[in-house]
Image 1 (cartoon, one colour):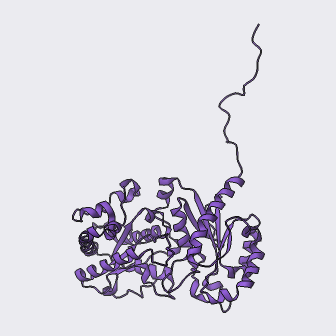
Image 2: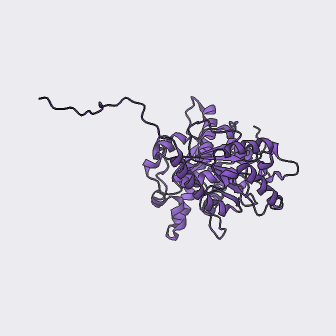
Image 3: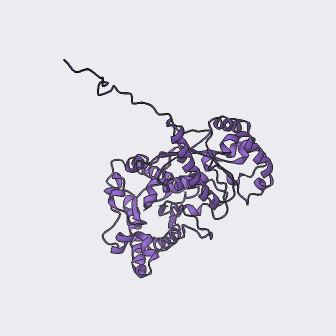
Length: 403
């Protein structure tokens, strides 16, 4: 990868904000992550003041429309001086947060092996967390600095932002965090460095998530066009280099790939999301309840359409996002419905499957139902195998008593 965006050292972000996006989508269209955005802006102001640098921080909301999302994210991870992780229960269930953490630590280890320097990672509390909720590697990290206000330790940033009586404590905590960012950046002295392919990175918290909660795996399989497979004339705006980068509801204010949003919702439901795609299936061969997320345009593609027909032989729950603001899709809706029916006819009639999901709010409402139906059907249809062990007792027999 190149460092074209932040090649100038003065333009490097002082911190990269890693956070779990909210899964709640208000009916009134209010931004559910507005409090995170406010914290980011307030922190940028204070970091800018204490450092004098023009680029205080990076948040994924800054990725411009038309930019390849993983590329821009990787540039920021390769250039930032400090990794600021906004901790919450949802943080450790987010595939993308786990990948961001893994990417940054990989960069640190490649540069600082054998050096006595502080780790350029700052964990900050977004919500109240019990130490038992933290992965083992984080328990030794100082996420409640001694000079921070006491209410920060009790409530996290979200709590002291929401409660008016803690306004001064919030301002103090933000300023202290800005000073900590500056101090950590100077002591760590981390140079820019390449990041591994973001799409291929593992999730730093994957093992912890499964062990900590014994969560049921739910597979979210994406069937969508990639930029290199689009039919002639199809708008590239909604697509990425891989199927999971498909962003059907994208607009100027919303740039989250549907797979990322879906895995957050599934994690909120208490399950373990596994995101894969029809062209790159999960490496774990174990069967699990599955929900298929389908770009209606791939139903016309001979190769992908053929794969969907194969999947439909053993039907799974399907959600087909349709963006009502995507003119090309709405104009072709009648024909797309016909071809989707042709390749996924059995799957679409399952309870919980929805063929036309017209908005992100509708998707948020439909996904839990699809997951629930997928789980119910999985346990009804899963074969029951007897234990592969010898009996521990002899089979009882009826014997006549001795005379």
